Each structure stands twice: as structure tokens, then as C-alpha cells.
Amino acid sequence: MSLTRRDFARNSAITGAGVALAGSVGALGTAPNALAATETATADDHDGESADRPGGVGYGPLLPDPDGLLALPAGFSYEVITYSGRTKLESGEFTPSNHDGTAAFEGPRGATLLVNNHEIGGPRTRVPYPVPLTEGLVYDPAAGGGCTVVEVRRGKVAEWVGIAGTATNCAGGSTPWGTWLTCEETEDKAGSNGMTKDHGYVFEVDPEDHRANRDPKPIKALGRYAHEAVVIDPKNGHAYLTEDASNPNGLLFRWTPPTNFRHGNGKLRTLAADAGRLQAFKCFDSGGQYVDDLSRATKIGTVYGVDWIDVPDRDAKTVSVRKQFTAGQITRCRKLEGMWWGDGGAYIVSSYAGSESPGQAHDGQVWFYDPKRRTLTLKVLIGVNPDPSQDGHYDGPDNITVSPYGGLIIAEDGDGIQHLFGATDRGRTYPIARNELNLGSADDPDYSEFTGVTFSPDGKTLYANIQTPGIMLAITGPWKRQRP
Image (cartoon, rainbow, N blue to C red; front, side, top):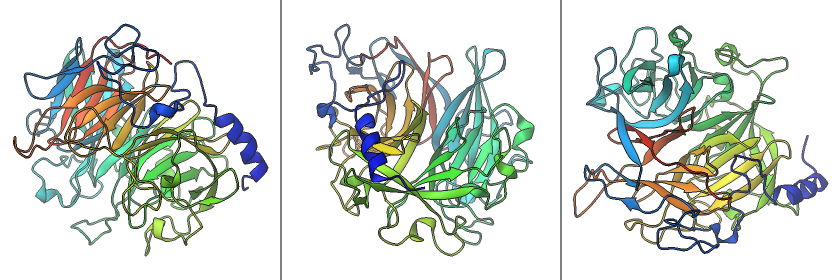
């Protein structure tokens, strides 16, 4: 059923005020100054308090790391959990490279279990440290990607393979029943790019039950395209999925489970390839006018109504899913990236808008989709970074998580310097960490993106990855609730 103009006008009046729940992101980004707003130790916020004074936003300036890895605020520290080519799996192979999306789960006897994607594409023979082909856990033996499971308990670390033989495992999402959905960001088919099976699917990985991961099967009902992230609505079972693609720009999808289907461990892999309904989003403004691309939004608090349009061929047998729609049928967006479920809806990242986007250029958006009202609200808008080589600005948000201390924590995947940064309920941004591992030279520095940002179940540790060469870090310190 389409959302009527009257329904949208009523819903947008409510949603535009922000969704405020205790302990959550709430009305993130509704402040007019949220556009590229940055808190530093010398920049006063709108209440006259700076980040280094009690009650201010953030944790103060970042201090250089003498070891040249991670700059953090005073009082914070980090530990290296895994390091590609240095640490080893329980089976003896080196930790795979290209760390990406990660989720943390409560494990047995006080352990934290982390499922870590490895975004390795193409033939595994070209990669120094692919995910090992562990017997019984391999989908396509030609592919080098997959997931590892990392167990952290009382300072000890163990790592093993969760799934192997998948390709370009980028982001994904945790499920309400305690598993990880890993997403392939590729459309490679059998016979192309060295692959022996079709790729571009979602797979389920159980962090605790090794047997549940045997004989990997793609969840074809969720479609085959350049997947980025996925979240599950715990109330009605819908899955929301982002696509990171261009020419044309990618889509936001919703999958509705079939009647009487009940979610649970391993249930998704039992579904038929055409089970449920896979649909792409179509947005319109308060005047009922169709919106072709999310880059058209230029103001924090912009609210769009959302309709959902059936995907003709979700397995993309001959034509990529995003190319199956004609102009006017759906809404597009450049680089739809990370997602996180919170406040009864999905926080959705658009990394940036490039020249192929028809609207205003920007260096990042965060949207909130409210499934009850079927509205999409712009919460954070980051202006074009004037000089990515200089500290103090952000661009290219990617993986995100909702912080137990209020607001969002965002991993930067832009140009130049790379950060982890926070965004408060009022849209203020502040630094948490800076990657100081220079993979280039002094004259031409190169810093890898941050990925896989997620808090431990107890909220005391922030885990994050440096994608290249592949380093998982545990950050601890005097976390505090950010002022709303």
C-alpha cells in the first residue's frame, strides 16, 4: 500500500521534531550547525563549553601515539587484538587481511566474541593472507574473503574461521537472535574474476556454534548485488539492506519475510530463493514530489516519505538489480554504506555525493528510517571537506554504531587523514581516534580507512579496525555520557 500525501504530512510533522528515547541517539543532527560541525579543544560549543572542559562535548584533543598507530584523547588507551600477517589463528595460519565490518557478542564465561569480515575480492591466489579454507566452512574455494571469529577473554585472544570462500565481505549486521549476517560487496558470477560460484549474497555466521556454520549457503532471498550492510527489524522481521554501487547509484532495499516465517538461528538459509518480497525504496517530499536521489536534500531535518517497489529479478540473472528500474521508479543514493538499528529504526549512511549524483555535493549523510511512519529523516550532513590532508574535518562516513553513551560513533573512509568520530544528539561531531599508520611516505602519506566500529556488550570497550593491512583494536578509557 502506498503512503498517502495526508499520511506523510502527518508523519513528517512528528518525525521532523526528532525521535528522542533515553539512552539513544534521539534527535541526532537537528541543530542547524550540524553541517560539518566539529568540536575541538579550542572550539567552543553553543553552550559556551569546549571539549576539554567538564561537561563539554567529546573527550578533548587527540594526542600523538609514540608508536605511530593510533592517536587518542588523554586517558584513553588501545590494545592490538589481531594483526594480519603477525597474529595467528588457532589452526596456525596468519590472521587474514582487509578487516572490515565487525559485531560483538556476549560469549561464554565472560568472553566477548567478535565476528570480523575480511574484504578480500578476486582470486585468493593473489592475496598474501586470505581467509584459510577450513574444511566444511567453504562456499567457493576460489575466493579469498570470509569471516573470522575472535574470542577475547581476560586478556587472552583466540581466532578461528567462521566462513571462507566468499568475496569482498564488506559490512553486514548482527541479528536479534545473536548471529552475524556478512555481506558480499560484489556482483562477480561463476566464470568471472576467477570465481567458480556466483557471488553478491548475504551469508549467516554463528559466532558461538561452529556446527551452524558448516556447508555455507547464500541467503538468496535477500538478493544478489553489491551488498554493504543489513539490519533486522526485531518487531516485524523486515531486513533493510544497503547497496554500495554507482553508474547508476545504488539502492536501499527492504525484504519482507513470507507469511508465518519465524526468524531464528539458521532459518534464513532454509528459505527458497524467491521467498518473501525484496523491494527498493522510492522517496517523495511533503508536496508529494518524487525524489530521484538523496543528494537532493540540503537541510538537516529534511523528511521524505518512502514507498517500496518490487524488485523484478532479485538474483540479477542477466541485469544488475539496480539497473532493472526505469527513471522515476525508485530513489538512488551514492555510496550507501553502514547501518545500525536503534531508536526503533535504521540509521543509514551515505558516504558522499560525487559528480554522478544529481543533487548537492556533500561528504557524508546519516539518515534515519522510521518503519512505523515510513519516513526517512536527514540527521547528519557533512559539508565537503576543504582539505582532507589537514586534521580537524571529516569526510566519507562508513561503518557506524549507536553508542551506549549517546549519539553515534562513525568510522571515516574518506580522503587524507582518517578518524573515528562521534556525533551527538544535537549533531555536534568530535574526534575519538586518528589513524597514524602511514602506509605511504612522508611526502605522500597514505592512511587506511577505519572499519568495524562496535562496542563490547558491556559498553566498556570500543572495537574498531584499520582495514589495511588489517588490524583489530580495542579502545578503552573514561567514556562518558555526551550531553544531549
